[in-house]
Length: 427
Image (cartoon, rainbow, N blue to C red; front, side):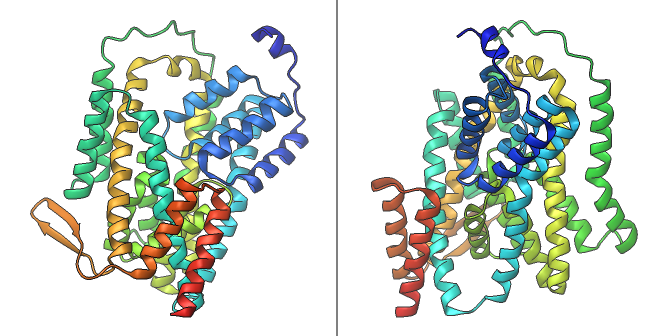
């Protein structure tokens, strides 16, 4: 079937149908970005034929260039493509809302259950499962991103920088983007069509930018510039702009900053990531979970909810800005070789960054007595003491269910969590 015939066969959903489908996708979006994108393709391209294959791939290519959760951004773009600004807001918000409400409820239960043996056993299993999930993501991304010697070298440099120095995450991402752009120099861009008129989209993008910063500004005016809510709004806004490679890549930076600011420990970070994997929506929902912990430790449950909602807002509001501002220029952007090269550079660096996350968290989990060694700008997690037997058993189980006898993610998490509970209760 030709592209023209395929386009003629498409159906235009009503706004009510799009609302129902967006809610369905938001409630069923388990399994990380790859699974979420595959589900949207099956529902919207193959089954309902609301979106053409070409439009879907164009949107996906565009969203991979953007910082933030690419699956949520793709959902937003598809809604914008079908029903303009209204459609984009519907699909972008509903993609996140069910999982966001659930992750904040889990954060409330998490802080209330701290110290209980049963809860500790379940969380021990979560930590083991997350280590295996990170390794799985590392292998998958390395196959995709490390196609040449230059990019493999870039990944190695990023790994060494994150694992053994105090260089900040944003600087490593910036250098990787520059290196990738330079490696792409000399490539001939494809013919780029003229951009569509986009005055209205830019006006809406300006409004979206204002809405992004509205709660942060309001908190600063009412509570003062040094208040925790302002700090969280500023920090997670910055994170939203530099988050390439998903939640696994930003975890190392989030841990450094979260521990330094007193919001969460490394163990709590692993718990947060594991719980985010059990809920629908993007894994980046780890952000409001961590913010909730910081708010709760500062002033109790109400501040926890306010902090979590602030982080949720500033994490996802930028995605609407990128889509509404860049949507009309999608073909021009997709054909820019320097942008594509920068993305490839970031992708290679993300592989190294995720490897450093696996090394640090694996060491802390398996050898709980590990300590941080620092000398100037050098820094590393050094094993100290005996390995934890329960952690070794659960890690072996999680790795087996991931690589030797693979099972779906949620089922894998449940098995390892129940095993952690059993080991803790027996002990």
